[in-house]
Length: 175
Length: 111
Image (cartoon, rainbow over all chains, first blue to last red):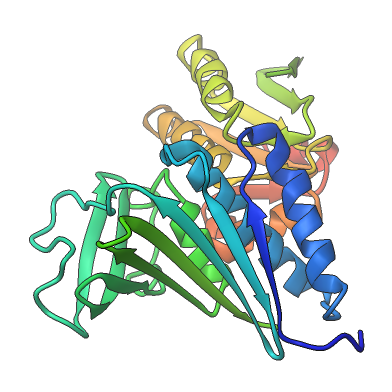
């Protein structure tokens, strides 16, 4: 545990669902070479990795999606990079690029996939805690990926780079 | 998707015979269980004894199954989940929506 921090690692995202869990465990083992993590912290890392990679396999057409892992003290930053079109919301007045900055708005990706976000700049937003309005079976979604990442992390930010046509998912954990 | 089915009176017991409950099998699992509901099963137990991890896709499938049981006043109990999976339910607060039990025997008694 005396290795010098920060450590930056670049990892290719697996292409097949069957590889997700082993990839996740490998990433966790790598982080634990540099930081001691308790069980709860290990679970947070595993949940985030599973959902980030699952999201790519499910939605991205970029064969070269990658993850940058920045291990520091006390933070670990997991950034996922994907080339392609920016995220588009359905049933919402605002789209990226946002007109209003530092605003909390409700967005949805589908009828059962709603989120509250805070706009950080025209191409960047932060996912907010999804449970401020409570939870009932009628309203709970059937898409949990971004919820899980939001809840398991200390911050979860999406950013689009229009020049590079690149989506960035930035997850920070204080471990 | 490997599952095994048992019947305990009018309770249908589904045992997932996979280590991974994820994107690769969530849709198939949902359809299998929805067929069970369509064919008349109203009391369901799903055992995760052999499942090592569960992802958001499978969580979504379970929500869809629970929603499908609602109009029939059906009941769904989830059992034998490891600590990682229970933690996922707690994190998403789905432990307040689903009935979770430690083992099959106690789950059967719940009906």
